[in-house]
Image (cartoon, rainbow, N blue to C red; front, top):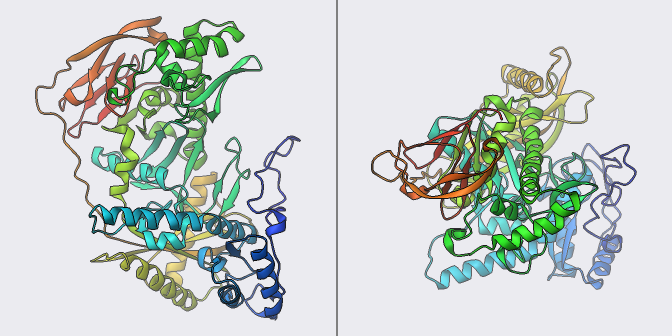
Length: 598
């Protein structure tokens, strides 16, 4: 199963494509005799002697954690439960992940991969979280330890020790949550979250104040191509992630400038760090262009070496391509912006939204350096540049509520299904999810929302639609059907209300303990812009290097207006306002920029 996958080529005409390698080698995969049919009935009982043999063989091969995924276990988990009991009997030291507990949904390949990833990281995550809790306790911490999930909610460390696969994209999810919070503060609820750090850029669409989510998450995508990664059935904020960060390596390739996806990471890091890096990066280009202050990087804790950055760009990019130093540095800056522009189109245009109708929230250490140029290229009229942009994702952890998601596969046509059976299933799912949330010592109301993955009968892919609360009578199911046609038309440009609709997976989310974030206010004082310094920075609209005013972010009072070209510095990031961009400081010290296409 893991080797064959879906038997699809994500690029049909590319004969050189390489799929991600299987996470488990064939020699560490065992089979057992049993068969449960697609309706949940048992055709072949579990051969327990055969199961014991397979367990012993795997343990003899050095296995310390097992992923158990049997056919149609999402409908009838009895055989999987028995295998788990046999592991405890034969090899009690081995940890076990059962697919019906982690991913009780159909599509065997995705369910298997989700189970395998959970088992793959379970021991490491468990040891880390236990060690973290112990260390915090020694330092006097008496509260509960919570962990961010990919879905945008938090759960207890104990729950995440059982389901670590749910935290795979937890950091970027926290950033998207905080971008939504800034949207609420500034009155812009439809936006694109743009998080550019040292290694990657992450983008997410937020509509009506809520980040878009998906249950078709792919790990290790190749060049962001759909179907090229390892698909998993987890609830996650729908992110597009590309290898475009401050540490992305630039080089001359086939007569042009190429940037990423390889990264210099933090060790050795960009050449300008002076830590042994030899390949030029986006950060090196931004230093050469004058956007980043070599003496105030990370609040002055690191002194950068612009000369070393210039030499690396000259040797590795400019000279091989016959470019001047400034043209090579500007080329690196432009190419990485173009890569991010393509990713932004994926989360907006391919989701049925015109980016010109949205607001961009740019954060991360590198996001404010590139955010205005990205907005100009896409015609996005407004940019929110948060204060403390470099730690926005960390602040987002404080905006998350306790949350737990449950999903079950039950394939049925909406015009033929019995609502009573669905209500019974939802009651069971609700009890499970609420119990996990209440386990987190959440007081007050636990909010339960329901949804479903639906499609036209005969299709192979689904869209997620809301399911109303209460009884699922014919009127409620009609609302589900109407929502499907509306969402399908928004996504694909058309719908066919005459076609029958079927739901394949019914989902539920329980959430509680919604926090309230009190952000710091802008500095008090007169709304005037006092320059911190003047620095030569490169802007092609100004015919190259020009004397550019530099401002201290912490000294800008609410109501202060700035006009590009300008640079605003703070400890965690730097904001670059190109010519034609104006920005105003709001009461929370955010820069609200207005831009026009370049």
